[in-house]
Amino acid sequence: MDSIEKLYDVIVAGAGPTGLMLACELKLMGVNVTIVERRAQGTTGESRAPGINARSMENFRMRGMAEEFEKHGNPLKAVLFSGMLMMPKALDPDFPDALILPQHQTERILTKRATELGVDIHWATELIYFTQDENQANVFVQQNGDIKQLSAKYLAGCDGGNSVVRRLCGESFTGEDPISHWIVADVQLDTPPAENERFGRNLKIGTYQVSNVEEDWFRVSLMKVTPPIDRSQPVTLEELRQAMIEGIGTDFGLRSARWMSRFGDGFRQVKKYRYGRVFLLGDAAHTHSPIGGQGLNLGVQDAVNLGWKLGMVATGKASVSLLDSFEEERHPVGAKVLQMAKAQTALIKPGAQIEALREIVNTMVEVPEVTLHLSRILSGLGVRYDWGEGFHTMLGQRIPNIKLLINGVEKDLFSLMHKARPLLLNFNAENNLEIPYAYQSSIDIIKAVPIVKGNSSVWNLPAIGEVPAINSVFIRPDGFVAWVQTAEEQFNSERLNEAINKWLK
Image (tube, one colour):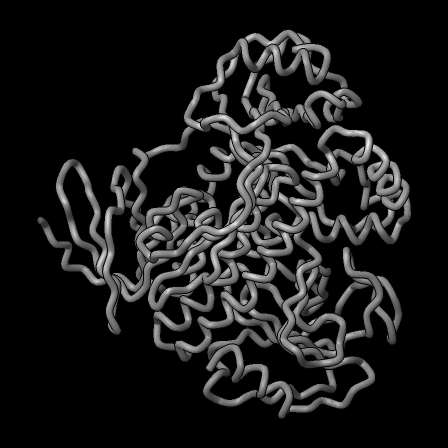
Protein backbone atom coordinates (compact mmCIF):
# COMPACT_ATOMS: atom_id res chain seq x y z
CA MET A 1 0.00 0.00 0.00
CA ASP A 2 1.29 3.41 -0.97
CA SER A 3 0.91 6.30 1.43
CA ILE A 4 0.31 9.86 0.36
CA GLU A 5 2.20 11.78 3.00
CA LYS A 6 0.51 15.11 2.34
CA LEU A 7 -1.94 16.01 5.10
CA TYR A 8 -4.99 17.83 3.76
CA ASP A 9 -7.32 20.00 5.75
CA VAL A 10 -10.37 18.34 4.18
CA ILE A 11 -10.98 15.35 1.91
CA VAL A 12 -14.24 15.46 -0.04
CA ALA A 13 -15.66 12.14 -1.27
CA GLY A 14 -17.62 12.69 -4.48
CA ALA A 15 -17.32 15.13 -7.39
CA GLY A 16 -21.03 15.67 -7.97
CA PRO A 17 -22.57 19.13 -7.50
CA THR A 18 -22.51 18.86 -3.69
CA GLY A 19 -18.87 17.81 -3.41
CA LEU A 20 -17.67 20.28 -6.04
CA MET A 21 -19.53 23.18 -4.43
CA LEU A 22 -18.17 22.27 -0.99
CA ALA A 23 -14.61 22.11 -2.33
CA CYS A 24 -15.01 25.52 -4.00
CA GLU A 25 -16.33 27.04 -0.77
CA LEU A 26 -13.49 25.55 1.25
CA LYS A 27 -10.85 26.77 -1.19
CA LEU A 28 -12.23 30.31 -0.95
CA MET A 29 -11.63 30.04 2.80
CA GLY A 30 -7.97 29.10 2.26
CA VAL A 31 -8.46 25.40 2.98
CA ASN A 32 -6.16 22.73 1.58
CA VAL A 33 -8.84 20.46 0.10
CA THR A 34 -8.89 17.49 -2.27
CA ILE A 35 -11.69 15.49 -3.92
CA VAL A 36 -11.71 11.74 -4.53
CA GLU A 37 -14.14 10.58 -7.23
CA ARG A 38 -14.61 7.00 -8.42
CA ARG A 39 -15.67 8.09 -11.93
CA ALA A 40 -13.10 8.76 -14.61
CA GLN A 41 -12.41 12.41 -15.40
CA GLY A 42 -15.23 14.19 -17.18
CA THR A 43 -18.98 14.38 -16.77
CA THR A 44 -21.56 11.75 -17.61
CA GLY A 45 -23.41 13.65 -20.33
CA GLU A 46 -26.67 12.90 -18.46
CA SER A 47 -29.21 15.49 -17.34
CA ARG A 48 -30.04 13.59 -14.10
CA ALA A 49 -31.05 16.49 -11.82
CA PRO A 50 -31.69 19.36 -14.27
CA GLY A 51 -33.53 21.79 -12.00
CA ILE A 52 -31.58 24.57 -10.27
CA ASN A 53 -33.89 26.40 -7.90
CA ALA A 54 -33.82 30.09 -7.07
CA ARG A 55 -31.79 29.72 -3.87
CA SER A 56 -29.07 27.69 -5.58
CA MET A 57 -28.90 30.37 -8.28
CA GLU A 58 -28.47 32.94 -5.50
CA ASN A 59 -25.65 30.81 -4.08
CA PHE A 60 -23.94 30.75 -7.47
CA ARG A 61 -24.48 34.50 -7.88
CA MET A 62 -22.89 35.14 -4.47
CA ARG A 63 -19.76 33.42 -5.77
CA GLY A 64 -19.73 35.08 -9.19
CA MET A 65 -20.79 31.98 -11.14
CA ALA A 66 -24.41 32.73 -12.05
CA GLU A 67 -23.70 34.15 -15.51
CA GLU A 68 -22.02 30.91 -16.58
CA PHE A 69 -25.09 28.93 -15.51
CA GLU A 70 -27.47 31.36 -17.21
CA LYS A 71 -25.48 31.20 -20.45
CA HIS A 72 -26.11 27.46 -20.78
CA GLY A 73 -29.48 27.05 -19.02
CA ASN A 74 -33.10 27.95 -19.70
CA PRO A 75 -35.01 30.20 -17.26
CA LEU A 76 -37.83 28.55 -15.34
CA LYS A 77 -40.19 31.27 -14.17
CA ALA A 78 -42.97 28.94 -13.00
CA VAL A 79 -43.09 26.64 -9.98
CA LEU A 80 -44.90 23.31 -10.01
CA PHE A 81 -46.54 21.97 -6.86
CA SER A 82 -47.51 18.36 -7.53
CA GLY A 83 -48.12 19.25 -11.18
CA MET A 84 -50.10 22.41 -10.35
CA LEU A 85 -48.67 25.51 -12.02
CA MET A 86 -47.79 28.50 -9.85
CA MET A 87 -46.43 31.81 -11.13
CA PRO A 88 -44.82 33.64 -8.19
CA LYS A 89 -43.39 36.40 -10.43
CA ALA A 90 -46.94 37.44 -11.29
CA LEU A 91 -47.36 38.30 -7.61
CA ASP A 92 -43.78 39.40 -6.87
CA PRO A 93 -41.99 40.66 -10.04
CA ASP A 94 -38.65 40.53 -8.21
CA PHE A 95 -39.04 36.85 -7.25
CA PRO A 96 -35.71 35.25 -8.27
CA ASP A 97 -35.67 32.92 -11.27
CA ALA A 98 -34.84 29.22 -11.33
CA LEU A 99 -33.07 27.43 -14.17
CA ILE A 100 -33.25 24.24 -16.23
CA LEU A 101 -29.73 22.94 -16.83
CA PRO A 102 -28.54 19.32 -17.24
CA GLN A 103 -26.54 18.07 -14.27
CA HIS A 104 -23.53 17.32 -16.46
CA GLN A 105 -23.40 21.02 -17.34
CA THR A 106 -23.64 21.97 -13.67
CA GLU A 107 -20.77 19.60 -12.89
CA ARG A 108 -18.72 20.96 -15.79
CA ILE A 109 -19.09 24.54 -14.55
CA LEU A 110 -18.29 23.62 -10.95
CA THR A 111 -15.35 21.42 -11.96
CA LYS A 112 -13.91 24.29 -13.97
CA ARG A 113 -14.31 26.66 -11.01
CA ALA A 114 -12.79 24.15 -8.58
CA THR A 115 -9.79 23.66 -10.87
CA GLU A 116 -9.33 27.41 -11.26
CA LEU A 117 -9.31 27.76 -7.48
CA GLY A 118 -6.65 25.06 -7.19
CA VAL A 119 -8.70 22.15 -5.87
CA ASP A 120 -6.87 18.84 -6.28
CA ILE A 121 -9.26 16.26 -7.83
CA HIS A 122 -8.36 12.54 -7.86
CA TRP A 123 -10.45 11.00 -10.66
CA ALA A 124 -10.98 7.22 -11.00
CA THR A 125 -10.21 6.98 -7.29
CA GLU A 126 -12.62 5.00 -5.12
CA LEU A 127 -12.91 5.47 -1.37
CA ILE A 128 -13.01 2.01 0.19
CA TYR A 129 -12.43 2.62 3.90
CA PHE A 130 -11.60 5.26 6.47
CA THR A 131 -10.63 5.53 10.11
CA GLN A 132 -10.60 8.53 12.39
CA ASP A 133 -9.08 9.52 15.71
CA GLU A 134 -8.95 12.69 17.78
CA ASN A 135 -6.51 14.32 15.35
CA GLN A 136 -7.42 13.29 11.80
CA ALA A 137 -9.27 11.06 9.37
CA ASN A 138 -7.31 8.46 7.39
CA VAL A 139 -8.89 7.63 4.04
CA PHE A 140 -7.98 4.54 2.01
CA VAL A 141 -8.64 4.73 -1.71
CA GLN A 142 -8.15 2.46 -4.69
CA GLN A 143 -6.53 4.03 -7.74
CA ASN A 144 -5.32 2.07 -10.78
CA GLY A 145 -5.52 -1.13 -8.76
CA ASP A 146 -3.34 0.22 -5.95
CA ILE A 147 -4.47 1.05 -2.41
CA LYS A 148 -3.35 4.45 -1.20
CA GLN A 149 -3.82 6.38 2.00
CA LEU A 150 -4.75 10.03 2.28
CA SER A 151 -5.08 11.88 5.57
CA ALA A 152 -6.95 15.02 6.54
CA LYS A 153 -8.35 16.87 9.50
CA TYR A 154 -11.89 16.23 8.19
CA LEU A 155 -13.76 14.03 5.70
CA ALA A 156 -16.95 15.11 3.89
CA GLY A 157 -19.16 12.39 2.43
CA CYS A 158 -20.77 13.80 -0.72
CA ASP A 159 -20.86 10.44 -2.48
CA GLY A 160 -24.56 10.10 -3.24
CA GLY A 161 -27.50 7.94 -2.27
CA ASN A 162 -25.36 4.79 -2.09
CA SER A 163 -22.76 6.58 0.02
CA VAL A 164 -19.79 4.49 1.12
CA VAL A 165 -18.94 7.12 3.73
CA ARG A 166 -22.42 6.83 5.26
CA ARG A 167 -22.21 3.04 5.36
CA LEU A 168 -18.78 3.13 7.01
CA CYS A 169 -20.15 5.54 9.63
CA GLY A 170 -22.54 2.74 10.60
CA GLU A 171 -25.48 5.05 9.95
CA SER A 172 -28.80 3.40 9.17
CA PHE A 173 -30.58 5.14 6.32
CA THR A 174 -34.03 5.11 7.90
CA GLY A 175 -37.21 6.09 6.12
CA GLU A 176 -39.94 4.79 3.85
CA ASP A 177 -39.50 2.25 1.07
CA PRO A 178 -40.72 3.21 -2.41
CA ILE A 179 -44.24 2.21 -3.46
CA SER A 180 -43.91 3.41 -7.05
CA HIS A 181 -41.15 4.44 -9.39
CA TRP A 182 -40.20 7.00 -12.00
CA ILE A 183 -38.76 6.58 -15.46
CA VAL A 184 -36.54 9.47 -16.51
CA ALA A 185 -34.67 9.91 -19.77
CA ASP A 186 -32.83 12.36 -22.01
CA VAL A 187 -34.40 12.01 -25.44
CA GLN A 188 -34.66 13.44 -28.92
CA LEU A 189 -38.18 14.03 -30.25
CA ASP A 190 -39.33 14.51 -33.85
CA THR A 191 -42.44 16.46 -32.78
CA PRO A 192 -41.63 18.23 -29.46
CA PRO A 193 -44.60 19.17 -27.26
CA ALA A 194 -46.12 22.63 -27.17
CA GLU A 195 -45.76 24.58 -23.92
CA ASN A 196 -49.21 23.49 -22.70
CA GLU A 197 -48.35 19.82 -23.30
CA ARG A 198 -45.15 19.71 -21.27
CA PHE A 199 -46.58 18.67 -17.92
CA GLY A 200 -49.69 17.04 -16.58
CA ARG A 201 -51.12 13.90 -15.02
CA ASN A 202 -53.67 11.19 -15.67
CA LEU A 203 -55.38 8.42 -13.75
CA LYS A 204 -53.14 5.70 -15.18
CA ILE A 205 -49.62 6.78 -14.28
CA GLY A 206 -49.83 9.82 -12.03
CA THR A 207 -47.77 12.62 -13.53
CA TYR A 208 -45.37 13.47 -16.33
CA GLN A 209 -43.14 16.35 -17.39
CA VAL A 210 -41.20 17.08 -20.58
CA SER A 211 -38.51 19.78 -20.27
CA ASN A 212 -36.17 21.20 -22.91
CA VAL A 213 -32.78 20.78 -21.21
CA GLU A 214 -30.45 21.42 -24.15
CA GLU A 215 -30.73 22.13 -27.85
CA ASP A 216 -32.50 19.13 -29.45
CA TRP A 217 -32.63 17.27 -26.12
CA PHE A 218 -35.60 16.87 -23.78
CA ARG A 219 -35.89 15.45 -20.28
CA VAL A 220 -38.89 13.13 -19.90
CA SER A 221 -40.08 12.22 -16.38
CA LEU A 222 -42.91 9.72 -15.90
CA MET A 223 -44.32 8.39 -12.66
CA LYS A 224 -45.45 4.77 -12.75
CA VAL A 225 -47.82 3.72 -9.97
CA THR A 226 -46.76 0.09 -9.96
CA PRO A 227 -44.86 -2.02 -7.47
CA PRO A 228 -41.24 -0.86 -7.55
CA ILE A 229 -38.91 -2.95 -9.66
CA ASP A 230 -35.20 -3.49 -9.42
CA ARG A 231 -33.52 -0.16 -10.14
CA SER A 232 -30.64 -2.00 -11.74
CA GLN A 233 -33.01 -3.31 -14.44
CA PRO A 234 -32.26 -1.09 -17.45
CA VAL A 235 -34.99 0.95 -19.11
CA THR A 236 -35.41 0.12 -22.78
CA LEU A 237 -36.43 2.56 -25.48
CA GLU A 238 -39.55 0.52 -26.13
CA GLU A 239 -40.53 0.58 -22.43
CA LEU A 240 -40.09 4.35 -22.43
CA ARG A 241 -42.15 4.69 -25.62
CA GLN A 242 -45.02 2.63 -24.21
CA ALA A 243 -44.94 4.53 -20.91
CA MET A 244 -45.16 7.85 -22.80
CA ILE A 245 -48.07 6.66 -24.93
CA GLU A 246 -49.87 5.31 -21.86
CA GLY A 247 -49.23 8.36 -19.72
CA ILE A 248 -49.21 11.25 -22.18
CA GLY A 249 -51.11 9.82 -25.14
CA THR A 250 -48.16 10.21 -27.52
CA ASP A 251 -44.43 9.61 -27.66
CA PHE A 252 -43.86 12.95 -29.45
CA GLY A 253 -41.98 11.09 -32.16
CA LEU A 254 -39.45 9.55 -29.78
CA ARG A 255 -36.32 9.05 -31.86
CA SER A 256 -33.46 8.22 -29.51
CA ALA A 257 -32.23 8.42 -25.92
CA ARG A 258 -28.76 9.08 -24.57
CA TRP A 259 -29.65 8.19 -20.99
CA MET A 260 -32.54 6.31 -19.36
CA SER A 261 -32.97 5.36 -15.73
CA ARG A 262 -35.52 4.68 -13.02
CA PHE A 263 -35.84 6.06 -9.51
CA GLY A 264 -37.93 4.98 -6.55
CA ASP A 265 -40.05 7.34 -4.46
CA GLY A 266 -38.56 6.24 -1.14
CA PHE A 267 -37.84 8.88 1.49
CA ARG A 268 -34.81 8.54 3.74
CA GLN A 269 -32.73 10.77 6.00
CA VAL A 270 -29.83 10.00 8.33
CA LYS A 271 -30.28 10.78 12.00
CA LYS A 272 -27.00 12.67 12.23
CA TYR A 273 -25.07 14.77 9.73
CA ARG A 274 -21.81 14.62 11.68
CA TYR A 275 -19.75 11.72 13.05
CA GLY A 276 -16.71 13.19 14.77
CA ARG A 277 -14.48 14.36 11.91
CA VAL A 278 -16.85 13.07 9.23
CA PHE A 279 -19.81 14.91 7.68
CA LEU A 280 -22.62 13.72 5.41
CA LEU A 281 -24.11 16.06 2.80
CA GLY A 282 -26.50 15.90 -0.14
CA ASP A 283 -27.89 12.52 -1.19
CA ALA A 284 -25.51 10.84 1.26
CA ALA A 285 -27.66 12.39 4.01
CA HIS A 286 -31.13 12.45 2.45
CA THR A 287 -32.97 11.02 -0.57
CA HIS A 288 -36.54 11.37 -1.81
CA SER A 289 -38.65 11.13 -4.95
CA PRO A 290 -37.50 13.35 -7.84
CA ILE A 291 -40.69 15.41 -7.75
CA GLY A 292 -40.01 19.09 -7.20
CA GLY A 293 -36.35 18.83 -8.24
CA GLN A 294 -35.06 19.38 -4.70
CA GLY A 295 -32.21 16.86 -4.43
CA LEU A 296 -29.36 18.68 -6.18
CA ASN A 297 -30.38 21.99 -4.63
CA LEU A 298 -30.55 20.64 -1.10
CA GLY A 299 -27.01 19.29 -1.54
CA VAL A 300 -25.63 22.56 -2.90
CA GLN A 301 -27.17 24.43 0.02
CA ASP A 302 -25.77 21.88 2.49
CA ALA A 303 -22.35 22.60 0.98
CA VAL A 304 -22.68 26.38 1.24
CA ASN A 305 -23.77 26.06 4.87
CA LEU A 306 -20.90 23.78 5.88
CA GLY A 307 -18.19 25.28 3.66
CA TRP A 308 -17.46 28.50 5.52
CA LYS A 309 -17.84 26.87 8.94
CA LEU A 310 -15.49 24.00 8.17
CA GLY A 311 -13.14 26.48 6.52
CA MET A 312 -13.01 28.65 9.63
CA VAL A 313 -12.36 25.66 11.90
CA ALA A 314 -9.89 23.83 9.62
CA THR A 315 -7.73 26.96 9.31
CA GLY A 316 -7.80 27.61 13.06
CA LYS A 317 -9.93 30.77 12.88
CA ALA A 318 -12.91 29.47 14.85
CA SER A 319 -13.75 27.01 17.59
CA VAL A 320 -14.69 23.44 16.65
CA SER A 321 -18.08 24.04 18.33
CA LEU A 322 -19.10 26.07 15.26
CA LEU A 323 -19.42 22.78 13.36
CA ASP A 324 -22.36 21.73 15.55
CA SER A 325 -24.51 24.33 13.82
CA PHE A 326 -24.30 22.46 10.49
CA GLU A 327 -26.52 19.62 11.66
CA GLU A 328 -28.63 21.93 13.83
CA GLU A 329 -29.49 24.08 10.83
CA ARG A 330 -29.54 21.67 7.89
CA HIS A 331 -31.19 18.55 9.35
CA PRO A 332 -34.54 20.33 9.93
CA VAL A 333 -34.36 21.81 6.43
CA GLY A 334 -33.82 18.35 4.95
CA ALA A 335 -36.72 16.96 6.97
CA LYS A 336 -39.05 19.70 5.68
CA VAL A 337 -38.01 19.04 2.08
CA LEU A 338 -38.79 15.34 2.53
CA GLN A 339 -42.16 16.24 4.05
CA MET A 340 -43.00 18.49 1.09
CA ALA A 341 -41.89 15.82 -1.41
CA LYS A 342 -44.09 13.24 0.35
CA ALA A 343 -47.10 15.56 0.11
CA GLN A 344 -46.52 16.24 -3.58
CA THR A 345 -45.99 12.55 -4.34
CA ALA A 346 -49.22 11.63 -2.56
CA LEU A 347 -51.17 14.26 -4.50
CA ILE A 348 -50.11 13.07 -7.94
CA LYS A 349 -51.10 9.45 -7.51
CA PRO A 350 -54.33 8.30 -9.20
CA GLY A 351 -57.55 7.56 -7.33
CA ALA A 352 -60.94 9.17 -6.68
CA GLN A 353 -60.01 10.25 -3.15
CA ILE A 354 -56.79 11.88 -4.36
CA GLU A 355 -58.75 13.66 -7.12
CA ALA A 356 -61.09 15.15 -4.53
CA LEU A 357 -58.14 16.32 -2.44
CA ARG A 358 -56.42 17.79 -5.50
CA GLU A 359 -59.48 19.88 -6.33
CA ILE A 360 -59.36 21.44 -2.87
CA VAL A 361 -55.59 22.02 -3.00
CA ASN A 362 -55.87 23.47 -6.50
CA THR A 363 -58.40 25.99 -5.21
CA MET A 364 -56.08 26.90 -2.34
CA VAL A 365 -53.14 27.40 -4.70
CA GLU A 366 -55.13 30.11 -6.47
CA VAL A 367 -54.88 32.22 -3.30
CA PRO A 368 -51.88 34.59 -3.74
CA GLU A 369 -50.62 34.13 -0.19
CA VAL A 370 -50.65 30.33 -0.59
CA THR A 371 -48.87 30.54 -3.95
CA LEU A 372 -46.10 32.70 -2.50
CA HIS A 373 -45.78 30.52 0.60
CA LEU A 374 -45.40 27.29 -1.39
CA SER A 375 -43.16 28.98 -3.96
CA ARG A 376 -40.79 30.15 -1.22
CA ILE A 377 -40.53 26.60 0.10
CA LEU A 378 -39.98 24.94 -3.29
CA SER A 379 -37.51 27.61 -4.41
CA GLY A 380 -35.42 27.28 -1.24
CA LEU A 381 -35.96 30.96 -0.49
CA GLY A 382 -38.17 30.35 2.53
CA VAL A 383 -35.49 28.80 4.76
CA ARG A 384 -35.17 30.51 8.12
CA TYR A 385 -32.81 29.06 10.69
CA ASP A 386 -34.35 28.92 14.14
CA TRP A 387 -31.81 30.47 16.48
CA GLY A 388 -34.40 31.14 19.16
CA GLU A 389 -33.47 34.78 19.51
CA GLY A 390 -34.00 38.24 18.07
CA PHE A 391 -37.05 40.16 17.00
CA HIS A 392 -36.39 41.15 13.40
CA THR A 393 -38.05 39.21 10.59
CA MET A 394 -34.76 38.96 8.71
CA LEU A 395 -32.76 37.28 11.47
CA GLY A 396 -31.91 33.75 10.32
CA GLN A 397 -33.19 34.41 6.79
CA ARG A 398 -31.29 34.83 3.51
CA ILE A 399 -30.40 38.35 2.48
CA PRO A 400 -31.84 39.12 -0.99
CA ASN A 401 -29.67 40.50 -3.77
CA ILE A 402 -30.71 44.11 -3.32
CA LYS A 403 -29.11 47.02 -5.16
CA LEU A 404 -26.64 49.19 -3.24
CA LEU A 405 -25.14 52.60 -3.97
CA ILE A 406 -21.47 52.52 -2.89
CA ASN A 407 -19.42 55.68 -3.40
CA GLY A 408 -21.88 56.73 -6.08
CA VAL A 409 -21.67 53.41 -7.96
CA GLU A 410 -24.62 51.00 -8.11
CA LYS A 411 -23.74 47.40 -7.22
CA ASP A 412 -25.54 44.15 -6.45
CA LEU A 413 -25.18 43.05 -2.83
CA PHE A 414 -24.10 39.58 -3.96
CA SER A 415 -21.16 41.06 -5.88
CA LEU A 416 -19.66 41.85 -2.47
CA MET A 417 -19.72 38.18 -1.44
CA HIS A 418 -17.57 36.53 -4.11
CA LYS A 419 -14.79 35.74 -1.61
CA ALA A 420 -17.09 34.13 0.99
CA ARG A 421 -16.23 36.62 3.73
CA PRO A 422 -18.55 37.88 6.49
CA LEU A 423 -20.15 41.18 5.54
CA LEU A 424 -21.21 44.09 7.74
CA LEU A 425 -23.30 46.63 5.82
CA ASN A 426 -23.83 50.10 7.25
CA PHE A 427 -26.79 51.91 5.68
CA ASN A 428 -26.61 54.93 8.02
CA ALA A 429 -23.78 57.43 7.52
CA GLU A 430 -24.12 58.50 11.17
CA ASN A 431 -23.55 54.96 12.42
CA ASN A 432 -20.13 54.12 13.82
CA LEU A 433 -20.10 50.33 13.81
CA GLU A 434 -17.52 49.31 16.39
CA ILE A 435 -16.36 45.71 16.29
CA PRO A 436 -13.63 43.95 18.29
CA TYR A 437 -10.14 44.56 16.92
CA ALA A 438 -9.51 40.83 16.56
CA TYR A 439 -12.22 40.58 13.89
CA GLN A 440 -11.58 43.77 11.93
CA SER A 441 -9.45 42.01 9.30
CA SER A 442 -11.94 39.14 9.00
CA ILE A 443 -15.08 41.15 8.20
CA ASP A 444 -15.76 43.36 5.17
CA ILE A 445 -17.35 46.55 6.53
CA ILE A 446 -19.05 48.60 3.82
CA LYS A 447 -21.05 51.82 3.91
CA ALA A 448 -23.81 51.86 1.31
CA VAL A 449 -27.18 53.34 0.40
CA PRO A 450 -29.77 50.58 -0.16
CA ILE A 451 -32.04 50.81 -3.21
CA VAL A 452 -35.19 49.01 -2.10
CA LYS A 453 -38.95 49.24 -2.43
CA GLY A 454 -40.65 50.79 0.57
CA ASN A 455 -39.99 53.77 2.81
CA SER A 456 -37.91 54.81 5.80
CA SER A 457 -39.93 52.55 8.12
CA VAL A 458 -40.79 49.48 6.04
CA TRP A 459 -38.99 47.70 3.20
CA ASN A 460 -40.52 45.29 0.69
CA LEU A 461 -37.93 42.64 -0.14
CA PRO A 462 -38.02 40.07 -2.99
CA ALA A 463 -39.60 36.74 -2.00
CA ILE A 464 -39.86 37.95 1.62
CA GLY A 465 -42.31 40.84 1.68
CA GLU A 466 -42.54 43.66 4.19
CA VAL A 467 -39.91 43.93 6.93
CA PRO A 468 -38.89 46.76 9.28
CA ALA A 469 -36.40 49.04 7.52
CA ILE A 470 -32.76 48.18 8.21
CA ASN A 471 -29.97 50.51 9.33
CA SER A 472 -27.18 47.93 9.38
CA VAL A 473 -26.87 44.18 8.95
CA PHE A 474 -24.27 41.47 9.63
CA ILE A 475 -24.33 38.72 6.99
CA ARG A 476 -22.66 35.31 7.27
CA PRO A 477 -20.58 34.04 4.32
CA ASP A 478 -23.51 31.81 3.29
CA GLY A 479 -25.78 34.84 2.89
CA PHE A 480 -27.84 34.45 6.07
CA VAL A 481 -28.55 37.40 8.34
CA ALA A 482 -26.87 37.06 11.75
CA TRP A 483 -27.62 40.50 13.24
CA VAL A 484 -29.86 43.43 12.34
CA GLN A 485 -30.23 47.02 13.49
CA THR A 486 -33.54 48.57 12.45
CA ALA A 487 -33.95 52.15 11.31
CA GLU A 488 -35.79 52.97 14.53
CA GLU A 489 -33.24 51.35 16.83
CA GLN A 490 -30.16 52.83 18.45
CA PHE A 491 -26.92 51.01 17.64
CA ASN A 492 -26.10 48.39 20.28
CA SER A 493 -22.47 47.29 20.02
CA GLU A 494 -23.00 44.55 22.60
CA ARG A 495 -25.60 42.77 20.46
CA LEU A 496 -23.42 43.04 17.36
CA ASN A 497 -20.38 41.71 19.20
CA GLU A 498 -22.42 38.80 20.55
CA ALA A 499 -23.39 37.86 16.99
CA ILE A 500 -19.81 38.17 15.74
CA ASN A 501 -18.49 36.04 18.60
CA LYS A 502 -21.20 33.44 18.05
CA TRP A 503 -20.32 32.85 14.40
CA LEU A 504 -16.65 33.75 14.10
CA LYS A 505 -15.03 32.85 17.43
